[in-house]
Length: 366
Image (cartoon, rainbow, N blue to C red):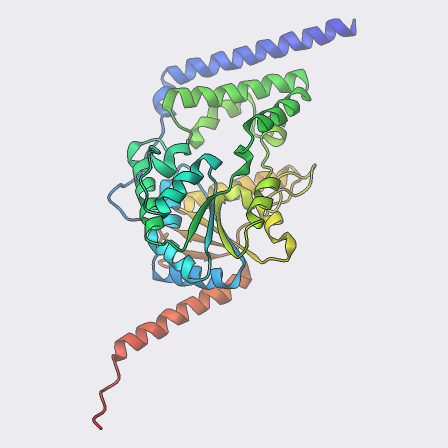
């Protein structure tokens, strides 16, 4: 009798997964195709770079902290990484003593990074954007690609390093997720399968990922389901160890979620925010947001983590690529300790401006 009940549950779970997948497929290929279509709001003629006060603030922060973490608040906004990899940003960080720039890129990108740095030809199509599934247009990929190459070639003393070691052993990652999947109940497996299929269907339809990719799958399998919290949780244990194996201070550009104080509670802290300063090294986390919408998205995610009983932490400050109304500096301080650096940055610029306005000292005739 118990076996019959279990078979019944499995059959119902299977039917629910198939039904969910069918519903998503019908909706995605019907009228909602255009509603879910990626919105590309990107100006290829604009240069996305830090302003003077942001550069001064970056410089002071990079000098004070061993690791400077730059959290990408929206992978589907190329302006964020273009801002972080702009030649002016890279120059500012290099002048502040940072020589290693760690990127959320697979190991396959390293030969390309080294070739660009050494001004050698490369055959890697789309360059740094080749592994970027969140960019939906040719213009976005081209903009990021050209910005990175210009920033790298203009600053030979900065080395860019592929640091996402989660992709060192794809089979191991798959086995880990499969093991977690197999530990789920039949119903939870069905929901997880529908969630995964929904996202893959979106990628097949549009050729990229955007936040819209999760709308319909979330209706089938809500974000707080066991799949989203257990199977797809971020584990940066190996990535953190890899980064700390390099001598000297560094810059780390990863998705903002990698710098939450904790992403998993059941297995301990595994975020870069916890691992990088583990040996007494100081760490500052600055999120880079295209606009206030990105900040609100991060806050929403953090609020949800709190609801699930997990610990999370906002960044120390936010840099806006497009400064919001009422904040021309494009800097928002969250950690009070960063206010001193911000005040110092403003004072430094005032002193330079004052010195420039006074002009050179008059020539003395002997």
